[in-house]
Length: 420
Image 1 (cartoon, rainbow, N blue to C red):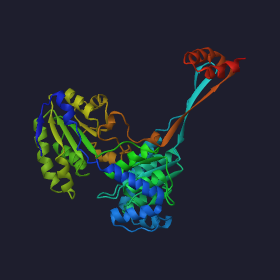
Image 2: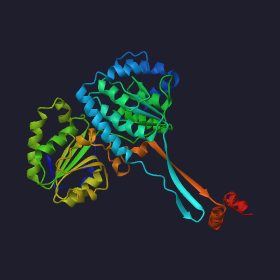
Image 3: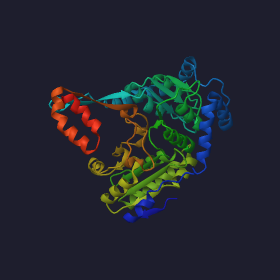
Image 4: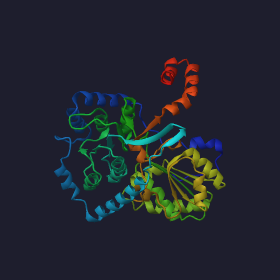
């Protein structure tokens, strides 16, 4: 399980960057059937699927405000305070992403600018599995609040009181009791109880992920393609093996399909970290998940930091921890990562919960092309332009010449007729 890969060649990197494979060959027909059933039977299909897949019986699809309040108030006071602190930090960080409108005069009489417009209806999915991910409600609903989304619909089969506390705090407008692929179908299609949304956010298992991709094919936007969670750590002799082991295990305990990668220029540090992992894993309530995850993980010895950077840019980790000398200079050389954690006192769990950055991040190598969720994820950018008669005269020759060269005479005429 803890084999050390020593000095791999660049030609080995693609194989080492592979993620655990998901079994999805049989998912297509199942997801298509779920969507078809929800489309025709709506709330009835949601009740039926909830009974079939989760062995739960539900009558009302949505929680009432009174039910949300009652459940939210059961959240322990200490946890309430922690959530409020996280809320304040996340809100502060995302509010800072609001950009002022800036009008640009590209030439005399031609003024162009861009405005941000909220996505009116957004859906948030929170799984109800072995971990109650109430923190993800904060990560998704807070920027939706700031953006000005008018409808924020939350679907979750979870019942932890903190889910309801976070939902109330973040201005959720509908909270539904359904989960799984059927919840994604409901958000994508709409039912009697759940409004159809324009974009769906949130994590989930392979069924939820497949349902989100099916929704995307049918005209509903999603936050990003997603797979199991992952972390990569690069450390040198300045790092603490106790801290590194804790960071690797904090990711491994997510689930059996999570992946951790540890790169170092020090074999001694790798061996000390492995010993620490073996000690710390024994005390974890989710030890079984962590051990299964570690089976998908790799410990890699590299000759120098440049090799580590090259590998990490190919791997494109969801979470990347840098525990090394010249950490900010090293971070500047990272081109592909969802979120970077710098130094010995910046654990990934800080970003997962309360530092302020968003923890909804691209996995499975998608950090090469995707950003994590941010304020812009809940907005559309609309461009505007205002051209005076003088401005159009200044532009007219270029427009007409280009339009006629493309054989689009009506485009040219739209200018020429105005110039008469």
